[in-house]
Amino acid sequence: MLGSWVRLTLDTTLLGLEAQSVISLRLAQIAMGQGTPAEAQLMVTEKMLAFMDAAMTVAAGGSAHQVVQDYRRQVQANARRLRLA
Image 1 (spheres, one colour):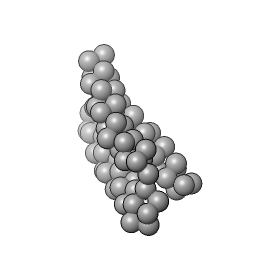
Image 2: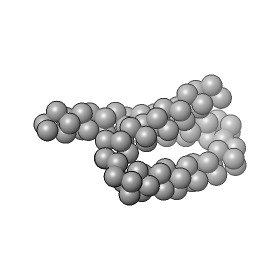
Image 3: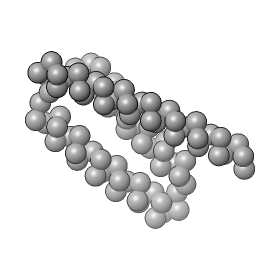
């Protein structure tokens, strides 16, 4: 039981750090004039889609840890995409 809480705490902390790196990458692109309207739209829509995915996961009996793992995958994919841009 305690192990699952420690794992959730670690994954949630990593999610926060990874999300901050995506925010930094996006702000840097905007500051350099490389931000696009499509990226701005994506910032909004991906949050709505992530919320709906999380709600569906919980409604289907998923755990908080599963929700955090899904968020981390999405954030890591954004980081990879933004680093290549």
